[in-house]
Image (cartoon, protein in one colour):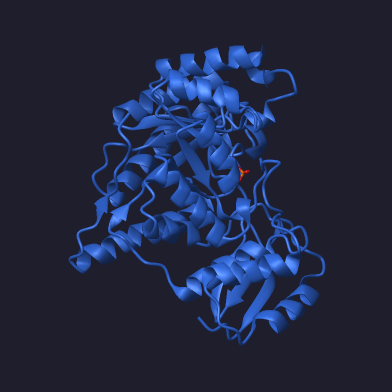
Length: 380
Ligand code: PGA
Ligand code: ZN
C-alpha cells in the first residue's frame, strides 16, 4: 500500500491520562496503556518530542510503498530499538492505523467474550487478585454470550448491593469482599447461567521478591504454597482460566501448574506477546495459552507472528484490552481476522466499543446470510 499521509495526535484515555492517536491514509487508531504492565513490554509513554518525531517520520515514510512488516520495520528503524524507547506509544498507534488502512479480513467464527466482573489489585478494588472473570461457555451466539455476561454482572451487583462500592479502571465491580468470598459469590451467580470462572491473578503485583502477599486474607505464600493455593481454587470453583498465577520470571511454576491441572493457564506478563518469550515457554512447557496485547510488543506484524507461533504450538491465544483504553476497536478486528477463540474486553464502560464492534458484525453477517458461528473453545 502507498502511504500518502501519516499524522499523530494527543488524545485521552479511560484513566484520563494522555495517549497517542495516529492516522494513516485517513484511518484512525489509538494506543492503549496498562497499569500492571510487565517488565518485558515495549515502551508505552507519550513522547514529549511527538511533533518532531512526526515530521521526521513523514519525511521517511510518506510517498513510499509498504506492507505491514516493512512499515513496522521503518518505525523500529527510526526509533533505533525493538522496544520503541524513543517513540513509545506512537509506534502501536501508527502500526494499528496502517493495519486499518490496509483492511482486516473477517472470518465468520467469533470469539467468546471473557468479561471482568469483579476487580481489584492495581486496577482498584478490595481484592489482591486483579480480575474475577466470567466466560459464557454455553452461549451459541455472540449476542447470547454478551447477554449472559451482562446478566451475571447485573445479578451479582443487585444481589450484593450492600457490599458493592462502584466500578474500577476496567469497569469491573469493586466490593468489600475479600478474594475467596468474591470467588464463592460470583461462582454461584455464574453457575446459574452456565458460565465458567477465570482469574487474572496478575501475580507480579503480589510478589515481594520472596512471597505472594494477599493483604485482605492475611496470607503470604511462598511459590510452593501459591501453587497449592491456585490448584485448590481451580478445583473448588471449577476454574476454566488462570492468568499470570506466578511472577514474570517463574517459567518453572507456570509449567508445574499447567501439567498438574486441566485448566487454561495463560501467560500475560510472562510472555508479553513476545515471540521469543513465548518460544521459551513452549520449550519449557509453561502455560497452554497466552494473552495477546499488540502494544506489549509495539507493532502489529510482531503481534501476528506471536499469534501464529502460538497456534502452531497449540497455545490458545486470548486477545485483550488494557486497563487504560479508548474506543479503538482494533482488537475486535484482530480477533475476527485471526480466528481468536477468546477476547478479554470487559463487560461495561468504554470497553463496550470493542464488544459492540463484534455484536454489530455478527448481525451484519446474519443479514447477509453469511452464517456467523462461535469459534472453537478449547474443551476443558
Ligand atoms: P493492564 O492489565 O492493562 O493494567 O496491564 C490488564 C491485565 O493484566 O490483563
Ligand atoms: Zn493480565
